[in-house]
Image (cartoon, rainbow, N blue to C red; front, side):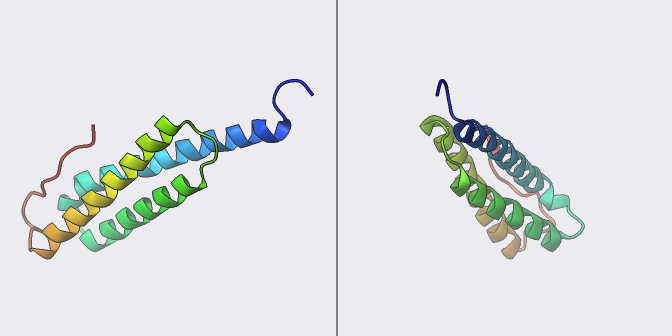
Length: 107
């Protein structure tokens, strides 16, 4: 059989789709982080943020054959989102609801 098998072709396509979905989840999480200080319902925003983070972590674990560099980059972004969530939770727990939340942007 020449070239790649149908299974390998489908696996690569699925991995690309998972990467795209993971990227969208991360983007969503970072957008929520950026706007949570002005959210009318911070608890609802935190729930959405936790969900995006959980989904991103789960999708990362499902990825099959992607390059180590791409996997490492995605892993770093997932960890960064998790750290942002921790910082935001600490700031809200410390009574920072009315103040501007501070966190570094993801570059």
